[in-house]
Image (cartoon, rainbow, N blue to C red; front, side, top):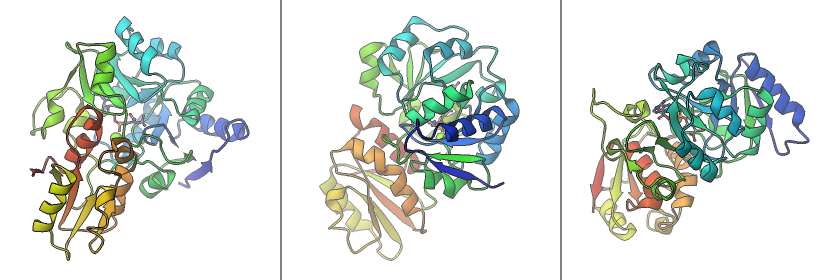
Length: 345
Ligand code: TXA
Ligand code: MG
């Protein structure tokens, strides 16, 4: 299959391209679309055959459900059997935006989307291209991140192309993603409500609206084989480069000193904060943002991991920020990239 790619810089001027992409969705095809978090691989949420093509294109495990993307609050009623007032409160505060809610699913969502679960993940993205595509398609769009399963999520159209060229119909290129990590996922079907995946909307942001929300325990450890988790995605290996990665926690100064004590310049590489680039200039090294700028780190982390993936190393040593509310998303992805192989210095 030939994968077309359209650069969308102005939705009004390029309306015909959006309509063409929407027609591909309605015909059961696959379209990669930019969102404010990462690129998604979209198809009609009501088309089981298209959904199985998404799983096949990504090599995604069958038990890992997809997020359904909507472009109007009224579509929430079509994909959920009940919409609790707490869901509306979160929607009023964070939608359109990088927040996904787990809610009871309606009968119109096929079991292929939810991997047989009776709940559905729903998100109303804020990216204008995603919005325009969903609205033009006239159906909610089911979309996982547009990467091969196991790779870091794509934050540019080129990343999507590298992973999925020849496997999907169309890529809409809307430029680099603004946030760079996947959306915050909150489970509103559990008591207390649980944060299942940290993102740009932080735990304390959620608690400001729903104070009883807690962070799920499984966020903080490697899920053992057979362990029961609230979100199937938690048990799959994710975000990982092919070379083993070790996350070094502690201040930037201390972690850089530690790295020098264990580092082999012939076989290893470093993922470092910007300030430490000069110290590592003679070794394979990629920077992913200033030490205290978690937003810059979030935006650049996956691209940095993909860059490091162009070579094979015995070990990638990654400087990792301290785990606080504002850094939880970055730390979570780094720990998962490390397979929870963490050194505290
Ligand atoms: O930012 C994002 O959320 C991006 C963009 C494209 O919207 N999408 C994304 O999708 O990251 P994906 O498929 O890579 O991650 C969805 C996560 C998975 O960990 C999955 O297990 C979880 O959401 N999930 C989906 N439906 C669920 C459900 N009903 N219950 C619990 N977890 C669910
Ligand atoms: Mg994903």
